[in-house]
View 1 (cartoon, rainbow, N blue to C red):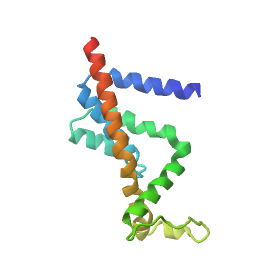
View 2 (cartoon, rainbow, N blue to C red):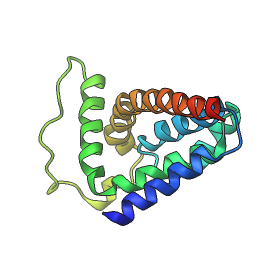
View 3 (tube, rainbow, N blue to C red):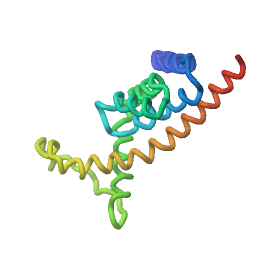
Length: 154
């Protein structure tokens, strides 16, 4: 547990010592947090770099923030299930939650089909937005206030 706290303190120290405007750093963190909640495993870092560059935010802050989601690896199955449930509910008409998940009827070949994206990936992506947007806004405004207070003390 001590190593985890030291790791998080190190990342926070890197964030506050970045040489950029408070808006750019807070924006980069918000982008990283937002993309970190999406189920786009494997492209999150590149996506956060690209979006931070396009929106003129700090790309290093975006990469640091997107890497923070690695700390939550033990609870990712729970988060992904909640994202899927919410996404399924939003996409279903009339709205209802998905049936209980049973793994005995799923074959490996089914996972590689394009249609699986619409059954699983799309609800996951839609549901992740309900976690990503509030978290990104919260991180943006909290970090912006911290960085502005830190700059005013200097």
